Image (cartoon, rainbow, N blue to C red; front, top):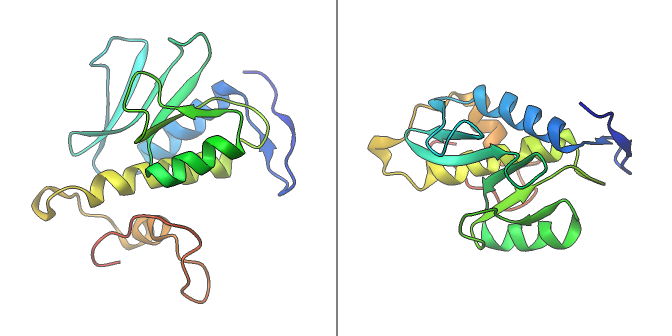
Length: 160
C-alpha cells in the first residue's frame, strides 16, 4: 500500500486507492446482514445487504476504487468537492459514485459514504426484508449531530 498523502484541513490523512478499499471493506463487513460476493468475477468485490448491492470494489479501471450507492444531490456535491469522486463506474451515474484516493479523501469520509450507501439500500427495502440493525449501528446511520439536528441528508431507518 502506498503511504497516505498529506493531511487535510480537518487533520485526517488523505488516502490512496488501496487504503480507500481497505477502509470501505472494514466498515462494510462490520454492518449487519452484509455479504461479500463476486458475481462479476474475482476482480470485483461486491458487498450486499440482504441481497441488495450497496458497495463494489475493483481495480478494473486501472486504479483501485470503490463504487457506492449515493443520494443524487449528495453525489453531485461530492463530485464537485473531491477530484477523487466521480460518477459511478459501470453503474447508474446518477445514483452511484466511484471513489479513488486523493486529496481530501479521508478514512472518515469513506466510512460515512459506506454507512450512507448501506442506509440508503436498507431504507429502500420493504420492512419485512430489512435486517435487524442494532441501536449502535442505527445511531451511526442516523446522521444526527449533538442537539438533535441533522448534520446532512442521510437516510433514517425506522425506529431510529
